[in-house]
Every structure is written in C-alpha cells, then in structure tokens.
Image 1 (cartoon, rainbow, N blue to C red):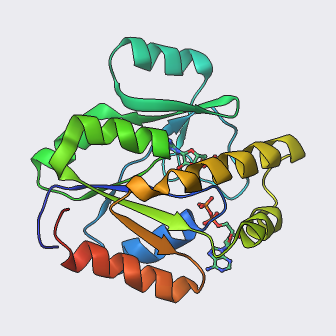
Image 2 (cartoon, rainbow, N blue to C red):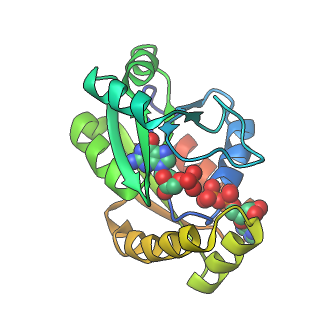
Length: 189
Ligand code: ADP
Ligand code: 5GP
C-alpha cells in the first residue's frame, strides 16, 4: 500500500461479483480490513453471521441509529443496511486500510465525512444481460427482490461516473488484478 489509513469504498450492482472479487482481494492483500455491515435482511444459506453481515432486527437497527452507533445507512428494497462507526474509526486510528462494501448512496455519504481518506471503486458488469444471468444463477433472490435489484442496478450504473475507478468484471482474474493494482500502486485521487 502506498498510504495507510484509507477507506476503500467498494460498490457495484447486486450480482456483479463484489463478494467473489473481495474474496480474492483479501487473499492477495491480507492486511486489508473488511468492515462488516449490519442488515435487517435475512441471511442467505451460504452466508455467515459476522463474516458477511451482522443480521439484526429492525428494533436493534433503530436502537443503534438512536445511539449514534451508525456511520451511514441506506434502505435497499425493504431492508436496512448500515456501517457501524466505532470499528471504522479504530481501524483508521491504527493506520489500517478498510474496505466498505456499500452502495452509491452510502459512498456519497462516507465521502462527505471522510473526504480525502477515500478511494472509491465501482465494479461494472460486462452487460446488463450478463448481470441478470449472474443474479439468476446465484439463485438467492425472490422474483420481487430480483426485480428491485435489476432496477436499482441500472440506476447505480448511471451514477458510477462519480467513482475514482471503474472496473469491468468480465474475466474474474483480470478484474481482480486491476483492483489489486489500484490498491497497491495508485495514490488517492
Ligand atoms: P455481489 O457480491 O456483487 O452481489 P457475487 O460475488 O455474489 O455478487 O456474484 C454473483 C454471482 O456471479 C456468483 O454466482 C458468482 O460466482 C458469479 N460471478 C462473479 N464474478 C463472475 C465473473 N467474472 N464471471 C462469471 N460469473 C461471475
Ligand atoms: P446484498 O443484499 O446483495 O448483500 O446488498 C445489497 C446492497 O446493499 C449492495 O449494493 C451492497 O453494496 C449494499 N450495502 C451492503 N452493506 C451496506 C452498508 O452498510 N451501507 C450501504 N449504504 N449499503 C450497503
């Protein structure tokens, strides 16, 4: 890493391959710290509490929000997603680079708060059709959730120009190489 203590804002439409890429990224840059968000959505069969998310109730989310424990949050479909604040500040204080897997809305909010500490990366699908295929193949969403995700995807891709870097996830290894290169060699924009 050329500079320590950055927030890596990692976004892209649902199903584009963010988790798949992050798995490779954490193996190749083990010192990266992953920020685990809280969510009120249900856990998917392949997910693990505390690794993918902290799965919480709506009451618990409201309590965290009222107590000022949340850095930013968004409602996606009918569920809330939020970044806990305290771990982020502790990691930054320790000079760590922290990855936040958040949406476009969350990225804008974190950028306002942490300004120059942020590097933002948006992962693009090779095409909308391929995104649809990946989301269908993953098979984790109900039909109504699937539709919401596809509608949100088009909207998010339109807003992706505000990101520092955009990487197309067509060939997985090539996309991973590109992200590693950005994090290892590029200075903050
Ligand atoms: P996200 O975290 O962005 O929602 P996932 O990492 O869960 O997306 O990936 C969605 C699906 O697409 C998974 O089944 C994954 O294996 C597949 N996938 C990811 N990257 C690629 C790629 N480059 N080519 C083909 N399939 C991919
Ligand atoms: P999924 O349900 O597919 O895990 O996530 C849905 C969307 O919520 C994705 O775009 C993901 O990046 C976003 N997301 C996950 N955690 C957070 C968070 O803490 N804050 C915000 N703003 N978005 C999040």
